[in-house]
Each structure stands twice: as C-alpha cells, then as structure tokens.
Length: 440
Ligand SMILES: *[C@@H]1O[C@H](CO)[C@@H](O)[C@H](O)[C@H]1NC(C)=O
Ligand SMILES: *[C@@H]1O[C@H](CO)[C@@H](O)[C@H](O)[C@H]1NC(C)=O
Ligand SMILES: *[C@@H]1O[C@H](CO)[C@@H](O)[C@H](O)[C@H]1NC(C)=O
Image 1 (cartoon, protein in one colour):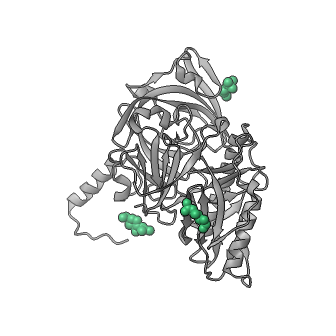
Image 2 (spheres, protein in one colour; image 1 turned 60 degrees about the vertical axis):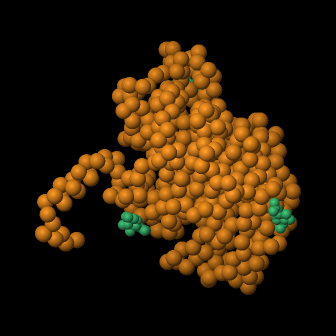
Image 3 (cartoon, helix red, strand yellow; image 1 turned 45 degrees about the vertical axis):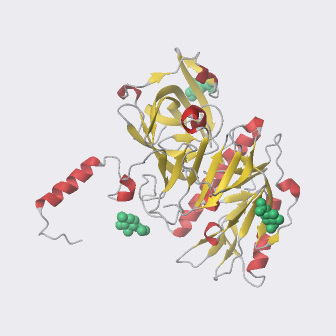
C-alpha cells in the first residue's frame, strides 16, 4: 500500500488515539464500536469482523461449512446429554473440536467494568466467565475479582448455592462443578454488577471459572438464557419479566449485527405465536410443538412419533441459538429430504458435502419448507434453507438427520433457520413468537 506523504500530522495522532481507545479490538470498523442502547444488545456472529474468535486465516467457504458442522456435532451431543440427563462422552475425532459459540453479545462486568464477548445460549441456565488464574481457560480476557470493588463471594448457605450443580464449600464460599459439551468446569460462585446494554444489574450471580478441561468452553464466557435457576431470566425477573427476543444475522452478512432485546416493552406486536411446552425434567429447554412439515405446499408424511413431545424421554422439538443447522430425527429428516429432492427434480444428480446429503452442482429451483407448529406456520425462504458456494457452484439443503453416533430423540430448530427472523421468548405467557425481520 502506498501512503501519501501529504497526510497532516494530526491524522496520525488521530489514528493513534483510535488505537489507544480500542484496547480489545479489533478493526476500525464503526459497527464494532457502536455502543448498546437501552435494553438492546448487539448480537455478533463469531465469524464477524467484530469477533475476536473469527478464524485467523479466513476459511474457504467449504472449510467454514465443515467447521460449523463439526461444532454442531459437539453441540448436539451436549443437547442430547441434557435431554438424557447424563454427561457426555467426548466424540472421537481426528482433530480437536472447538465448539465455538455461534453468537456473542457484549456484557460489562464489575466496577470498573470489563467487557466480555459472551456466548448466547438459550438452552443453558447459569452464566460463567473465565476467572483470573484459571487453569485451562483459553482467553486473556478474564474476570478479576480483586480488581472489582463490587464483587462478593456467595456463601455456602446462600440460596443461590443450592441452585448450582454439584455445589461444594471452599472455606465458606460456594463452588461448583459442571460439564458443558465435552468440557468440565470448576468455578466459584460470585456476585457482581453486570451491565446489559444500558441496564446495570447489581449482585448478578455467576461462575468464576477456576479450572476447565476440554475445548467446549466459550473463551469469554457464556450467558445462559434458559429458563431455569440462576439464568438471566430468573435473575432479572423484576427488570425483564422473563421476556426476550433476538434477531440473528446471517453468517454470510458478516458486517451485520443482530440484536438481543431484553424485556417486554420493545417487542414486536405483529408476530405469530406457538405455545412453549414445559418439560419438568428439563426445565431449561425451550420445547415447542412441531406438528408437521410442508415442502412447497405438500405436507410431508412423517411418522407422528418422530415429532411427538415426551417429557419422560425428552423427545420433541426445541429452538436453539447454539446449533447452526437444523437437525431432525432420522425418519423425519428422510421424509423431508426425499420430498425436497422430488420437488427439485428427480433427474438431477444429488451429491454430498460433509454431513449434508442433498447437494447439487447445478442451479436449482428449490421449494420453500414450512415448519407447522401448533398455532403458527413458519415458511422459510431459500436464504434459510440453502447454502451456496460462490466459487465451487454447489448448493446444499442446510439440514441434516441427527448424527448417527447420537441416540437422539430431539429435533433442533437451529440458528441458520432462525436467521433474519425475530424469535420472541415470552415465558410469562408460555409462548414463542416468530416474525420475519432483516437483522441490521
Ligand atoms: C465491512 O465494513 C468495513 C468497514 O465499514 C468495510 O471496509 C468492508 O468492506 C465491509 N465488508 C463487507 C463484506 O461488506
Ligand atoms: C470439582 O472439581 C475439582 C477440581 O477438578 C475437584 O477437586 C472436586 O472434587 C470437584 N467437586 C465435585 C463436587 O465434583
Ligand atoms: C398451517 O398450514 C396448514 C396446511 O397448509 C393449514 O391447514 C393450517 O391451518 C395452518 N395453520 C395456521 C395456524 O395457519
């Protein structure tokens, strides 16, 4: 690059100021610096230019897809373990699975505040952050209790200590262990002020990770949006009344951020709803009643058992922010895929790409797919159904059957299928809403 010699000295001074003012960042991209307003947090894809977790060398399209599929495998195994109520056996894999969270939000923690890019997880309850001195954490951005004047430990006798998994006492302070994906986490339970957009939440209880193994733990922590104990919903009940919505930007539109809107006030009024189902055994998961699937205008013939909700086995359908590509239990997926292939054209050659088994090397005329939930039909346009490589000229149906090494009973409506929609979680009224929206 050729620099013009005629640039005035203040230009360099200005550049230096900018660099000094953006210690944790990233690019000089105005999108990344815009502050969160009100109760709305910007949501970034992990591959966004604003994300420190984006691959250091840009991945090719194909590598990106395969990476996302590998992450999904770990995610699905984790979800299956939640459903089955037992911890997971890590998947055997030729390489390390870095289960990157797909979407991150900016959260300020402590006094003075430190910014963390925390993974959003709708199917996990508690929040946790890498703690100063953590063994096994990968992040240099850590929460340091000694540097925050508003921090305090949670005592063993405190009610919050009864809500964490496997609580123990370290002196009089509450500590706990949990598994996340293929990782184990040992953390102290602490409380500090957490700032969500413009809203300070004093005394927010979260895990301060002391030790972790494996690579499933999001580097700068996790914000649990489940509906169980210690989740964001339960700790901000007075502020947000267990209501939130998000719009997830497409991973192709890397310069776009989406939003996480907290609280009932600014939620869309024109939106369709389906009831949320309660599974007392898996209280943090957001189950809905998927009653059928349409390809084009034809309702696909799916065995009812493949869609039925069963609180005992955990079978049914959930919405998840952390899985990328929708997974259906095998009989449902095969029926949908076959109907899709028939509509695209019997005479076209079908190929595969990684875990996708319905790909074409020629341009196709694809039908829409409609998820028919109780009380709400959601018709997905091509952007939510197909992935295209611009260079290789391959197009795939971006859904799959549950991985075959997982004995899965769960249908997961994943984030690619939710992108550019507003998804509203209205827990007090026990319903989930979906409306088209272009995330900007
Ligand atoms: C993203 O935004 C940056 C800064 O505004 C710009 O330089 C870049 O070209 C944009 N990238 C895309 C893919 O639009
Ligand atoms: C939690 O993990 C720590 C460190 O790995 C271990 O020493 C402790 O026994 C574990 N506690 C429980 C309750 O599993
Ligand atoms: C969804 O679509 C089906 C089939 O096309 C139709 O019978 C049903 O009434 C629709 N449901 C809603 C809530 O619009």
